[in-house]
Image: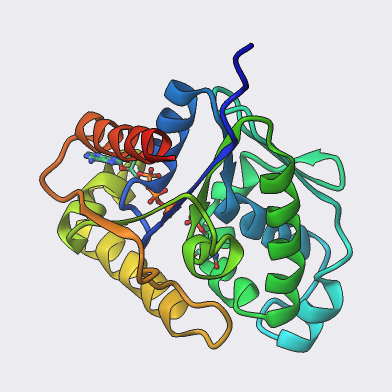
Amino acid sequence: MQTAPAPVIVAIDGPSGTGKSSTSKAVAAKLGLRYLDTGAQYRALTWWMLSHGTDVDDPAAVAAAAGRPDIVSGTDPAAPTITADGADASGPIRTKEVTAAVSAVSAVPEVRERITALQRAIATEAPGGIVVEGRDIGTTVLPDADLKVFLTASPEARAARRSGELKGAEATDLAATRAALLQRDTADSSRKTSPLKKADDAVEVDTTDLTLEQVIECVVTLVEDKQQAR
Ligand SMILES: Nc1ncnc2c1ncn2[C@@H]1O[C@H](COP(=O)(O)OP(=O)(O)OP(=O)(O)O)[C@@H](O)[C@H]1O
Ligand SMILES: Nc1ccn([C@H]2C[C@H](O)[C@@H](COP(=O)(O)O)O2)c(=O)n1
């Protein structure tokens, strides 16, 4: 009788716009794994705080509200979902207001403690394995992951990619897009608790001159190599 392969845990980290979400979703779909977007969890909590009058610039107020909403992530890579107290947060979490506030909210230790516990529970319960993407997955959330990947890309490439997703005047303002993502990288890398950082044992993939399909293929091969080596 054949035994089912042991679940595989894949951690994908990197700065904003390096392709973590697109790559992770596609890799999970190809390999039959679950998928968790941890940035969406921090964004959903930020959205809930903004909608409930929490002063997101006051770490004490953020800490006090950190445990209040129920944040639930659906982990099907073909249709990931995110809700806060039952409300669909998938649209509102992509607004400029949430993007501008999420680094401050996610820097608060009580927020990280709560969201990290959620992430670990989801990863442990994933049947067959999971691809988890974020900033501190390989270093803090899942330090025993079977494979850790750290995606990078030049600021110019990342700004051009992000610009392609925006509409109207925002889409053409490459310099402003570049400045905003570098500002978020600086905040995420310099916070005290669990900053954005490459794990020592992560494989770094520079995606600047790679197509999305090439990056996906590269990560699928890395996962398959790990599975075969077990
Ligand atoms: N290698 C690539 N070549 C060209 N475009 C890409 C590549 N990888 C991703 N993209 C595009 O860049 C944009 C940003 O990608 P994605 O959202 O996956 O990045 P991310 O690292 O998850 O960003 P964030 O951390 O801000 O959520 C998307 O429009 C995506 O289609
Ligand atoms: N593991 C994580 C994931 C995300 N964050 C914070 C920092 C990001 O700026 C923000 C939004 O993430 P994105 O949707 O752009 O991937 O959430 C974090 O601190 N740790």
